[in-house]
Image 1 (tube, rainbow, N blue to C red):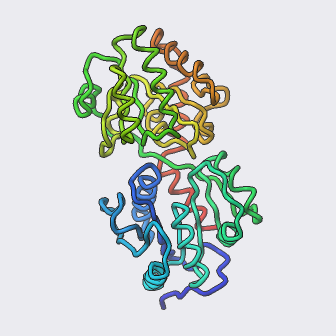
Image 2: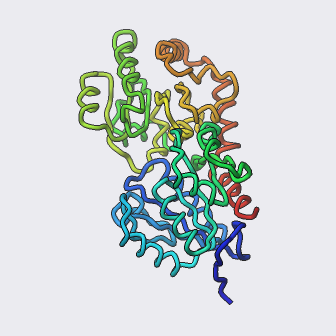
Image 3: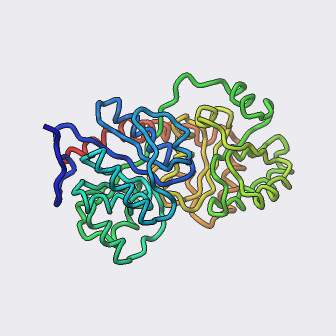
Length: 363
């Protein structure tokens, strides 16, 4: 007989065969949405009944991943959208609602309250949570809140009264398979074969500390004329115009499966000062690509304690000097970089992350 969820659910598993409903309200396809897709794929491979619900016109709608369908949610909340969503959730009859962004968490909370379905929220951002009455309701109703790093967890703790409901499960990445050669990767990205390429992959807003990249480009222009900084990803028009003023900055728009082309980079830099974890940085580290990163909060979980490659916030000059040090001696920190590669492959492989969620569902 098919299980019917009942109000007052207190555990994540309500049957031997859980039905997981993943919610996303994000219109774009970035690191969090890539993670959601990989988790969904991982659950399907393990025989879980996993369904993706997302906006009709969104980055996720362009991806094909087993059991997935658009839903009635929009980036704003309205009565019609709520009713349509609740009806759709009831029809799908999940035993777990897993929300992957704050807007989805709001809709998921409503469905959980009305239909008695277990609720789980994965939080990926390092921004304060406003202590509003509604936020307190959501965070303390959920059976589990997952933070992707220690830094994210620190922002969740003040609002959560049920401390045992908070756990840390990092985002994961796929381990590289049959890597392309550096020459092939550079050809795919349109980069010069002979140059030294410093790469950075992001949606380059001001929050990504793009000004530090401009400072670095200026410092490299005379001292290292054969070095280019490759910015791979979207740039707002105003920032793009500023970037084009630097002759040693290469601009490349969003690239599908860009992680496969990381061998194009000789060095990877992450200048952001606010990251929940840093999946683009992680993509470089698991490939043993040398990195220099600004301490973004979440990035601390990716580095071994005392790593010289993680630069304290606001120390722009130290960051630039560390890049210069590597250019002057590319063997510097070689063993440490290999050690970081082993560490990240052991702790942040997507299969390991999926298993951690399976353990959480089984609590």
